[in-house]
Amino acid sequence: MRHLLDTRTLDRTTALRILDIAEDMSDTQSREVKKLPTLRGKTVVNLFFEDSTRTRISFEAAAKRLSADVINFAAKGSSVSKGESLKDTAQTLEAIGADAVVVRHPGSGAPQTLATSGWISAGVVNAGDGTHEHPTQALLDAFTIRKRRFGADSRGQDLSGMHVVIVGDVLHSRVARSNVWLLTTLGAEVTLVAPPTLVPQNVSLWPVRVVYDLDHALADEPDAVMMLRIQLERMNAAYFPTEREYSRRWGLDARRVAALPGGSIVMHPGPMNRGLEISSEAADSPRSTVLEQVTNGVSVRMAVLYLLLAGERDDERGGDL
Ligand code: CP
Image (cartoon, rainbow, N blue to C red; front, side):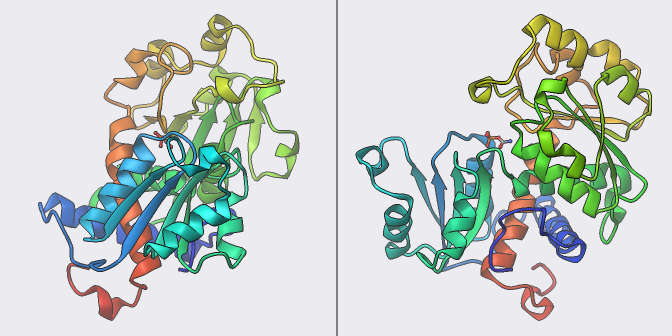
């Protein structure tokens, strides 16, 4: 794999390959093998033009667990504030020795530009670009859903026959977009639930069902309910109901969680607006996989970095990768 830019163009075989390698990575971590030598001598640059807690830290942990060197770059406090361009910033970091660049950027398409412009030769991983995609979040979400369903027998399984309901600010959500493409590629049925003003205009081109009533969608007994963060910072011209009305109509609270079937899980990519799209009772309930998703994110990102920087030949992996 040369780059990971989106899930829209990620084929089923490659997606399952990433999830299966992530299973292997997860196994090594649970056996308390803290570090693998796989990427010794490689350098991973985290190039973040937007804030992040989970994604940046878990890419750093993933790279370090594979023995890579890590350089963290945050636009805040850098020469970006003096007007330095994406091209010059990326070329500067490559001159320092980057083998892979993990990029988060407010502009949709920035990782694609880095990967295809010829400015740098390093592999590029999209860590979230504008409202476009966040592929590693979708991969860790799919990993979590699969793990909850199949447990130790997850390897090789797709999500056929499973139903995932994604709720909230779909309009601004790169997490929703990456999940729609990946989950449906893996065979799941996806229903989107949102206020009409937070549904993208081109949603009829997506392989999903759209409903506006959360209780109606939950009555279908989904396997997973994925709550999205309300992105107040991107709300611009979109009409947003009052926070009270939003949480009453589209928020996941204890009553709605209690009405879900026994095996349903409650997901959120984080960071959460507690009391708005999800109540504390729902976020902290035994059905919540919020922290499990974070843990799984390290294994999934180890798998992605492994495929980018060490190739994927089985003979290179050996028994313990
Ligand atoms: N889920 C997610 O992308 O979280 P961060 O913004 O903290 O990285």
